[in-house]
Length: 107
Length: 117
Image 1 (cartoon, rainbow over the protein chains, first blue to last red):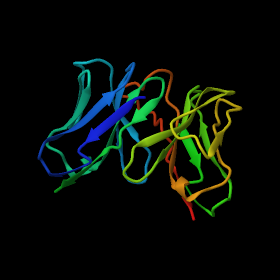
Image 2: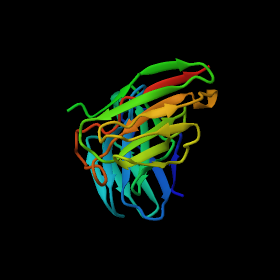
Image 3: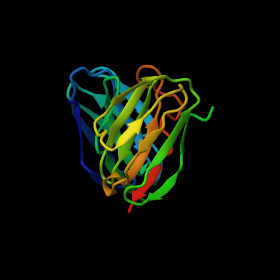
Image 4: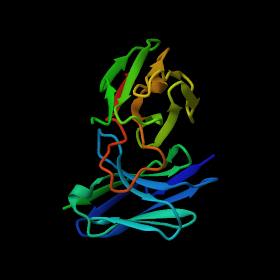
């Protein structure tokens, strides 16, 4: 059974304080790893897809990287609007999600 | 192109009542999924469908039923509501294969918040 573990559960940052979120996974046949952003009361919003070890994707202050066992979501110089829960999911014809990391950025 | 729509947005049920959560997508996608999300937890897959007439159980199917008579609709049925089914339910419909980076398509519906008392 696919397993996805995210850490830390919660992250409180000062505006401008860069940090990283971790997503470790065990899956029999990884066909993709995805990062989503979820704001309170809303459905997950797709951010990135990573397919193979060594791949990196960037979007504004976010950069996602992938190894054979884990993925990192780096937040560079975060702003308060980056506050959200970030979900990681692995894809093997269906998505298996981690519990998420709730990021709070203080001004 | 509305993407994925869900109704209702909120619902309160009494124990033992039944209801159907509606999910519709206008993207002509074959794949559709139902997830539940409990506080502080990740999304758990309830049921999924790879096309009209085809459904399969996910990780937590007990207490739920689904049907897929059309490509557009994938309703989720709760027959005998229990407090353990209090959760937020999300319907999703990605395109064939993994999502495409940079796409603006919202693959997840806005969710249905269900409380069973």
